[in-house]
Length: 482
View 1 (cartoon, helix red, strand yellow):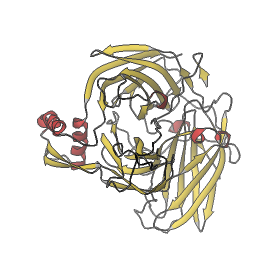
View 2 (spheres, rainbow, N blue to C red; view 1 turned 30 degrees about the horizontal axis):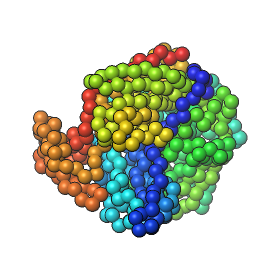
View 3 (cartoon, one colour; view 1 turned 90 degrees about the vertical axis):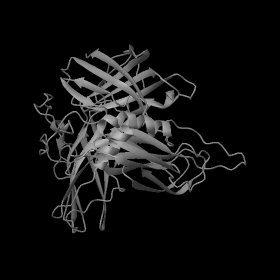
View 4 (spheres, rainbow, N blue to C red; view 1 turned 120 degrees about the horizontal axis):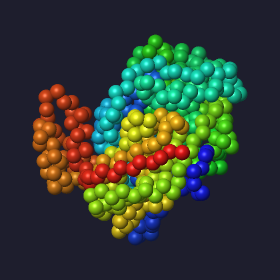
């Protein structure tokens, strides 16, 4: 990693949630404390090669002092249930859900029926605003970079960093390493890793499963996720991975599934100048209509270099509120920024509407949250967030512009009538009217009026956005790149 300043500010990519220790109750009992510590919506498709849909990832954390059994959660916008089973004290688990809306405020609630006694019964939900993509991306076959046969090391020619004329997602596809002969067969079913990609921000793979005796349209069990590990990072917190990831769950077609997994690294854990390649372990569980087994792989992949700019300290004031850009981490596939800003009020605010312009192209916010070591108490007036953007970064780019059009709050667990009335006023010119019925740690939207041709899913998205508090900017930062 090329350092552009004297010190490195540690930030966590996407999975940025505070860790709070639960206290004994007044009667001396120690209890679990279940929270949703992270939500993200990743752009994925149904064949692993281009943009075609979204996956919601949610991390459920037991931050209490006792274990919790039969843990369940629900994503309120889609109504999808989440089975967690058991969480020990301090343990967390990330789960993944399919979703069809392209934008909106996603709300995950843990213990929605309030069946588990907890030390804190008021912190069971978290919401996340997913912005609408600004580009229309067409499906195409993934380009690859040829390499010598594997194992042990996939050698990749010097990558061509010239941006393609048409962007494809994920944007790092022109830089991937094609793997040869990295396959395993169990009971007549073969899983093969097609390509791998790594830089200082992420590790990603695409793989093909063939020989399945499953009906067309069947899918892999979404609860069984690809597991990655890098032995050299085994002593690093969380094994060096942030916990934020996008896992494409493929659909069976004539006995074949093509899928992918994309997992983010903690900022600063890898230095590609010092370690230009990474030895990676991959476990791929194959379960669906039948349980095939878990496929194990080990290979070495080149890690593309990144850089960072610290001590930027660029402050912009908009609408009487100041915001400061503290640092940038630049990788071929991702840009992460640390922003510190005044809070408009004593509720949770975030720069979820942010986007960057790099190389003449606009990239939307793709995840982030409050930095754990700067998590603010309710009486504080400022917070610092780490926010990320999936990009196609070319080292020849000379500048980057980061824009935060407005700050937006999470929707509270209990939605008041004032919030409902305000949202209906905002939606009146769109021909939308709704009511919201609160429940125990959950609620339901009742659509009363909607435009012709607008699906319920699209209406739900617009309603969640309208219910959030908004503080208008914009805050615009322009940084010259070295």
